[in-house]
Length: 222
Image (cartoon, rainbow, N blue to C red; front, side, top):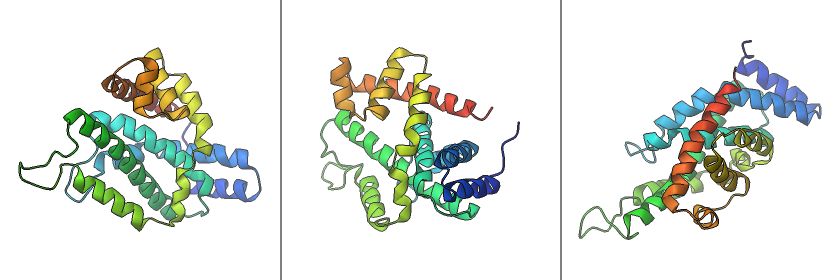
């Protein structure tokens, strides 16, 4: 059965929200997010930390897209317009914010794996390989201060969907890392210590589990 177009879903969402039926509004918004999962994935693939710079590594696209999708679901808690154009603009901002956060987390891991956090491009240089990306991220946060789209950071609307999807990840090891990451919100270091595994294993399990999570979320469209 084909899904309803985005503009119609937005009107139905706004009517349900304004009428006080928050449960129905939440379900409609989730369908709207599902409709745009492919758009989210393409935005993740096209994302760059700075103009002409590098983006999310290809092997992390699935994990980054899943995190961005869940933020789009959560964005419904603060969205207050019926216009499809405004929705798409907010979706782009939401995905870009998610990619920056995801990339910042990965850059921290890369710094640890590479050794000294003071590594530079040249032996006598002052600019580190991650400085441009981190500077762009910080500048973006300043530019976005007070933006209404910041409401998308709320995970309230997404938590039930996250828990449901993670519970259907078949591999116990992958599911365990996803639960600790997204449900208990533990940092990678604590996850590694709790499970008795290395940081590299934490990132590997999260990446592989994220790909399965992506498939589960995609199946919602069928």
